[in-house]
Length: 294
Image 1 (cartoon, one colour):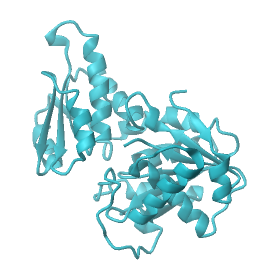
Image 2 (image 1 turned 180 degrees about the vertical axis):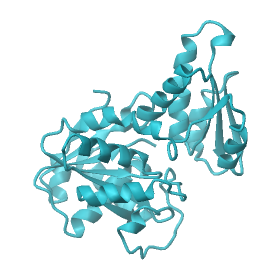
Image 3 (image 1 turned 135 degrees about the vertical axis):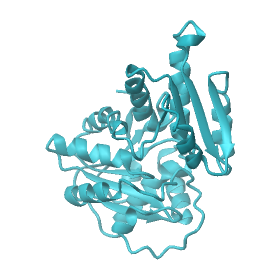
């Protein structure tokens, strides 16, 4: 097991639930749940002879790529064997995440800031020797989350998983894996008041489009939307939209009953669960909130 899952009976009681677990992906060696997928993508493309990568990221995916490529480069003796990574970040990247990324900057891992990083990625990857790492469009990104799904299924009587969602890649991967194993486990996605294209299929959003304090939810294109919505409808899951006030409330109640400090992005799962409970959702078994990292 890569990351642990922790039971919190006091928080469960406060939310009038039976069993509540946190899946601590924030403790993943690569910093977040993106460490499940990005390294697998890199390894597969390297097996095809690709040695140059580029990624446009709000932080966590780029961090996972940087961790993995630094690790691989430490195992390679000559410059010709080294792998190269260009990390393209936006002007509004969180300072904390930028500082983390800058720790990896060296002659093989480059970090640059752009007004339109995704468009820059498209231009850069016209060079056929450079592979763009895009979870939102590349189905190889689904493969790495099988191990996460396996770990989640070790939780007794698992009935639902709540996860903060941008592109929907993780939600799709988990839902497809559970279905392939004949398990009807609800997958609930949680998005923010400033980015909620997938959740719009499930809620009549009355929230103001405020700038969310959870800055990792950025995928407005939502290429996976139709697939994710169909999967969630089939397994009984749903989509939720949460405000800044609800995110902060989730952080406060989590700290009070677990003594765990969670980031605003990780608090999305708890805020979504709270919405579910308050609107009448109930489970007789276990529910998991994905604590995904910064």
